[in-house]
Length: 442
Image 1 (tube, rainbow, N blue to C red):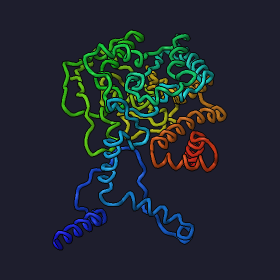
Image 2 (image 1 turned 90 degrees about the vertical axis):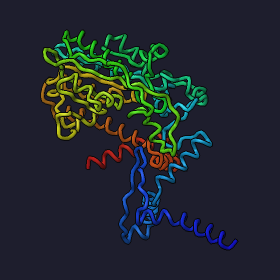
Image 3 (image 1 turned 120 degrees about the vertical axis):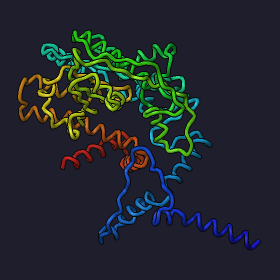
Image 4 (image 1 turned 90 degrees about the horizontal axis):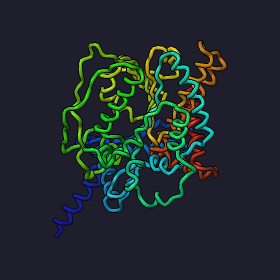
């Protein structure tokens, strides 16, 4: 009996001390956690920080993040919440019916909770009309693209507690799409197209555990986009298509991206996805138009896969109109540092893309900036430059807001400050994001 007690005591002490051992002398190879979060640095003690308590607070946070086996313990905790309580501890993740995964921003957009107002929509459309006319005169193609949204595509799996909530005045998607069509602005609406062919396609257009369109959906969309550009510009682009599909048991990126961010011990059951076997024709005698795409993460599936590089010449991706990517560059650039008239002058196609969750920030300040530059028709004066920079500022602040809102610990601290000040979470969120942007500029 005494031996059993000693074994149990020894086991308990080993389990208690194992995290400290792992932190000091790593015994196990740990897989890091997925997702966006800040890893706190070890703080340096000063007389002031020691006596005001800030050093202790920062050190506790550092110790919690650096403790051995933390990823494993986080995964165990997340798995218990998911399996026993059908709850996701990843910030912004919603578990739907049949365990279809959503991000809350898509559901908010689907319900019209983030509607920017008709005045904002009208203002952007009026500027877009001016910009489109100017670009047409210069032989350029401006094209707006609405990528599909998971909430609109799979409303049947959204939890009833969200469905029962009162809807907003309208949605950004409805307001923009109606206004674009009314004013004959060039628009490809993949959102409505995906819903329309949802029950007739051969393979899934959306994954169960991911937030982005499937590889098959990307291939279909790019085929439509190329056909549109060929007709609009009267050109013959590089031929491409697919010979069959690969349907593996495991998912490829990004078809499991929401579930990855949940950091579970065991994978969530999912459907098998189809991955087209792409082929490309010869480039000789074909036209590869230069392009600038201003868009959100949906375009990464096209740009990151190398698909756009095979179809376009100078291949530019301006992520949220903040960071500019080009395969020919050694590093990315800030779009605020790029001469917009020169960039547009060197391209053939300007494509602005957004999914429903990002339409509240659409078109990312790009139309504002180009509108002002085209009005001046040349070098931007000092006063005009300040106005241009303001649109870039708003776009960068929107990125910071999204980063805070999707980080559970960060957003909770903002909510706490909002309660202490007696203001809404959204107001506090904007105040903090604006302050951070200003500090970054300094």
